Amino acid sequence: MADTPDTEYPSPLRRLGTRLKQKLPGNGNGGRPRSLRYAHLIGWGKYLPEKVLTNAEIAQIVGTSDEWIVARTGIRERRIAAEHESTATMALSAAREALETADLNPADLDLIIVATASPDHIFPATACLVQDTLGAVNAGAFDLSAACTGWIYGLSLAAQAIATGSLDHALVIGAETMSRMVNWEDRETCILFGDGAGAVVLGPSRKPGGVLSSVLGADGSGGDMLSVPAGGSRMPASPETVSNHLHTIHMDGRKVFRFATRVIRQAAIEAVEKAGLTMDDIALLIPHQANSRIIQSAARGLKLPAERIFVNLDRYGNTSAASIPIALCEALEEGRVEPGDRLVTVGFGAGLTWGAAVIEWMAKPPLERPWRSRLRSVLYALAGVRSRLRRWWRQLETWLFRPPAARP
Ligand code: COA
Image (cartoon, rainbow, N blue to C red):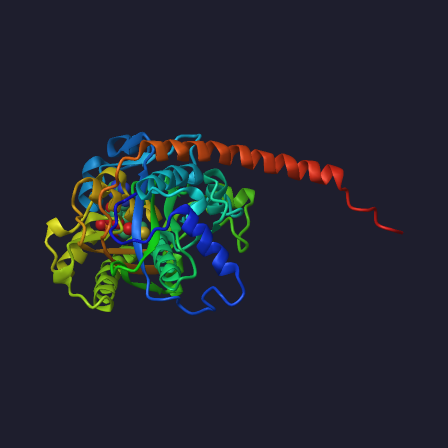
């Protein structure tokens, strides 16, 4: 387990006891907080596809150059999902890593949120595919559509649900296969995006810390600035929508740029003030990785030096909802986050949406527990068997118990 002091992650027996107690009449929290609880980040994980697509390679597809892309965006390369990969498979890999660092079994999860703008399907939710493959049999699951801000929205909702006592453990994933959403003939958008997934596990603690505050915002009047026009109920798929590339990302880059520079600064300041802190208390800003010029402009506005801002977009481009959790994982791997540090995560995206969250990092590096990892591998294998058995049983049920024929 990520060795968080005083986290009160109960043993399986205690958890069972708590679950049973909550089911007794007169128990549970009756809609009120049981007591003051804090939502801590106790696990984290990321997944990036192997295939690297460099600017030079993109320059062979559209009229652009490595120099132009680096100068205007800061991006040098991005990752592209393999044919057999999708948002759900990448989300699953990040989720397993996050459960590993949290030393938590999938059945302990109460909620799975997948923030994504590129789900496997309109429905079923990608979160349900992840829930099934993980074997998270006690979890509710849904997708969250707030584009690049989605992971912050998910973090905020999950943290509040944990703080009020309505659930204990939540998995919040940001996962995207943006390479399948861009028009590879549009040089203004195809240079920007990449694929990947990042995930965190949140759990309860009585010790102050974890998600200290969050602010969320939206302005639908700017919806047309960044959109995928077709494929929904307003413009269903047709040969025309496909040939006109209306299922791909359409963007007014300059307008989005202006919106982003304004809103990052504003959201970060609001979240920090809401947490009762000042920018001087913040060890690291982890912004949505869209464009290095946007990040630099926000840094100037927030008066933060470069060493207190995390940037990895040169290697991954804009992975939309996945960008902040991936960056958080890399910041941890690089030793840029220490227990007790306060971080600000801040995002913006289509909708328009924006949001920021202040996190007090309480988790210590995870301990190696090989036998527990092996147990989880067995649980994942069993989840596959369980899923297949349930499908067969459903098939058998429809065959055995045919509904009575309608009477004339
Ligand atoms: N390679 C070469 N030239 C390009 C190009 C590319 N990939 N994309 C655009 N251009 C050209 C334009 O056609 C334009 O040419 P013109 O002056 O002859 O008309 C010129 O470069 C300047 O275009 P402009 O739109 O002013 O560039 P910019 O400095 O605003 O950079 C973006 C364009 C897209 C990189 C920038 O606007 C941006 O990053 N916006 C935010 C996008 C974003 O973050 N979206 C996701 C939000 S979650």
